[in-house]
Amino acid sequence: MTESSHENVPSRQRRRFPGISSRAYEHPADRSALVALRKLTGFDTVFKALSGLLPERSLRLLFLSDSVRVSDEQFAHLNDMLRDACYILDLEKVPPMYVKQDPQPNAMCIGLDEPIIVVTTGLVELLDEEEMRAVVGHEVGHALSGHSVYRTILLFLTNLAVKVAWIPLGNVAIMAIVTALREWFRKSELSADRAGLLVGQDIQASMRGLMKIAGGNHLHEMNVDAFLAQADEYEKGGDLRDSVLKILNVLPRTHPFTTVRAAELKKWSETREFQRLMDGHYPRRDEDKDASVSDSFRESAAHYADTVRTSKDPLMKLVGDIAGGAGDLGGKLRDKFTGAGSGGSATNGAPGRPQDPEEGSSGASGPSGPSKD
Image (cartoon, rainbow, N blue to C red):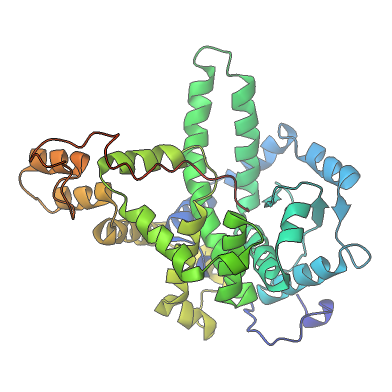
């Protein structure tokens, strides 16, 4: 894309990333899955053949007829942000963007042939300019990574699962695919958060946006450090029961929990990988065809191994103990489930007696609502 094709870019100077490959910011699990899919012979052909079955044309007509298309005449400030995000990430074709009337703060990037970005009025009204810039960059990151194709398929399969739920076992196979796609989807959100940071280049704005999505437009009542401390407390959990509940809570979601996203993005912003990227050292998209599937899987495996090793979650720590050949697994399982031996007694005065749920309860947390795409 030529620089002359972009107008009304903000005066604040930010680094541009000519020819950047999405591999530069993709989460390892997201990257390995995408590299493998792109290497499959005929993969693109198969999915384009599916376009006749998917309601993409219907979606495009729906947004065109019942939403507001962003342009120089409508939501001009969002149009400037969109062109700017494409300029920063060097995305050649600026995707169409629509504003949809919906009080729920949300955004998405969908489409098989060409990506479409949709943001809700709830999100536009909630975020300030720099926070919104990170969101638009997030969605442009989805477009650059090619996520919109798989996200459209997930949307279609989720709707299909509802329609065939009455058929015996008809829902089981589809939901198995949906569950696997959702796991990838959650990792793709972490990738897109990184893209949003590359566009906005303001970690505080990214943090503020995530806090607002979690707690509304009450920044004067919120604190970034306290918000990140919630993510740390969530990860530590209490015992294996909490670990299981966390898995059950996240399974039906397409997005990671908001505090987790904030913590992951803050951690990435402090890595050498991010600093090298900001210094102009990053993979180019003209090298994507030479990307190694095996290398991507190794990076993904190394990431998960490191996650298990450094995680404070009780289940992950137990997995690490088992992988390390720790003895007395039965005792460790008992202690993990009862909370014994993890920084305090799980008993009420009597050693070995599990604490009653009614005694000393600190409350329970349920799944949060949908977060932005």
